Image (cartoon, rainbow, N blue to C red):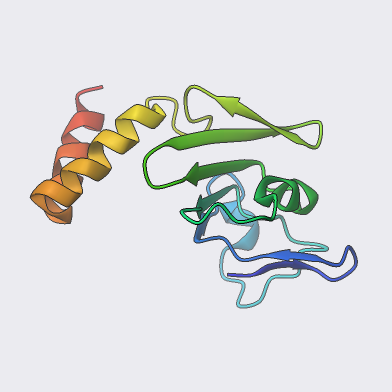
Length: 128
């Protein structure tokens, strides 16, 4: 999905994004107008190349409340506060998750396969 605000001359295409808290506001819509519709609640950015663009500033301009940013070895959780992102120790959307726990399950998916890794993640969540 491209999050585009022509009125602000800014757009961004996250690697993945999700509606969580705002899902009911966009449910069933085929086309979103980000001058009226909310941006996704969570954007996930995989930034292995260390792009010269400050991705977080663009997301802040678009009003995306939460961003997860992965650089290939570390993961950061960021929450928008006063037009700037503040790094969080826990996911504001999923408070059980720490960045290190997500990395642990990503590694399990690589080592054991995605199906097994996701099963282990589900078991971990159920036990919490």
